[in-house]
Amino acid sequence: MIRLLEGDMRELIATSPDNSVDCVLADPPYGETSLTWDKRVAGWPALVRRILKPSGSLWVFGSSGQ
Image 1: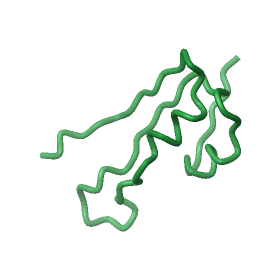
Image 2 (image 1 turned 90 degrees about the vertical axis):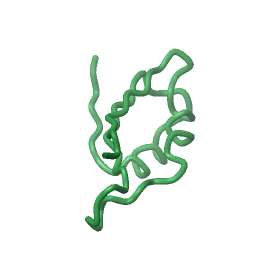
Image 3 (image 1 turned 45 degrees about the vertical axis):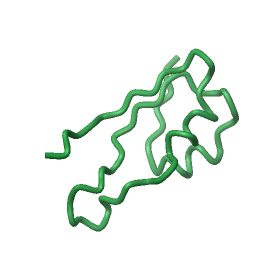
Image 4 (image 1 turned 120 degrees about the vertical axis):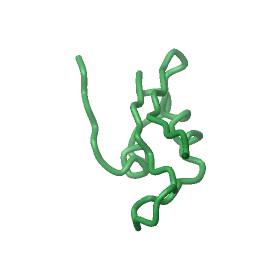
């Protein structure tokens, strides 16, 4: 079974139990533009680690910063 959650990851993680998620797919803001929403979220990988199962995966979209 696949369950997709969409929304502000800080809110989703806050309500998720420890070691309860198999995979997190993230496209976080990179702080490379002047857009108001494009602000880095400090410490988010540690938040994700709490909810990932020991065999879980974290997939993150990246940017070359150029």
